[in-house]
Image 1 (spheres, one colour):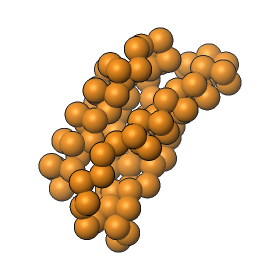
Image 2 (tube, rainbow, N blue to C red):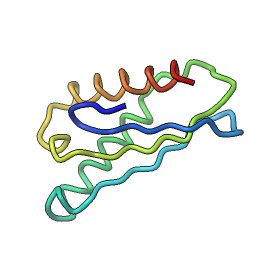
Image 3 (cartoon, rainbow, N blue to C red):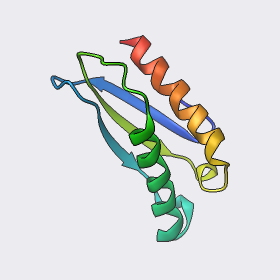
Length: 90
């Protein structure tokens, strides 16, 4: 699922929990910007509502440069919408 701020890819795993992998390339600029993007994505992953799904997902989040400057609420809305689409696509 591609959004304004990130691309989310998902694959079912054999676990009962989700796992997150993050890709933030050097397009962002320096390490400060890349780390900020990663921190935002990790926090969104922690805050997501777990629906008690029996099967977990391996999620890869590929951050786009806009994620650093965008308001956190807008990024959160996009993340949750893309995650729900991923769960529905399984």
